[in-house]
Length: 138
Image (tube, rainbow, N blue to C red; front, side, top):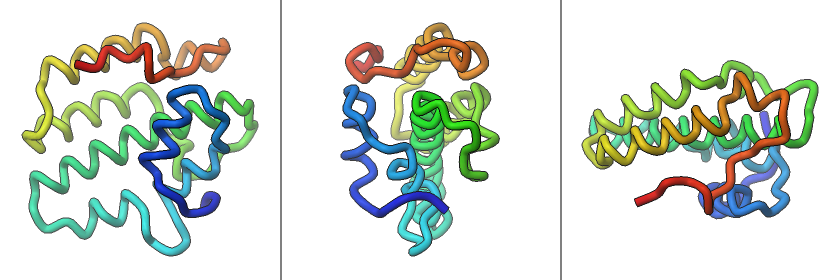
């Protein structure tokens, strides 16, 4: 399990803007003791398109949370984020496309940018972390 329960979107946005937000706080939105987390919302959604959208959000939270743990230079991360890697971005894109709520071109731009600048495979060795103002959001 991970930290306390707060507004996940708010804290993820703040972390991406460079504020110091504990990775455990972000992780709580992936896996929480009270089952009020993105994974639960996704699993409980009956509409397939909305479920794919929730899974896109889950992938985005997971990727960002892994970056947060990396930035904190944690030796060990919670099990729920251990398997997060660059493949998560591909899965995020597939889920987003299936949902029908996102433009493919925008997704590809963001994915390419993240892989070129913040690849988890490469950036683990560096001090490069995702910053919201650098994302190619249209």
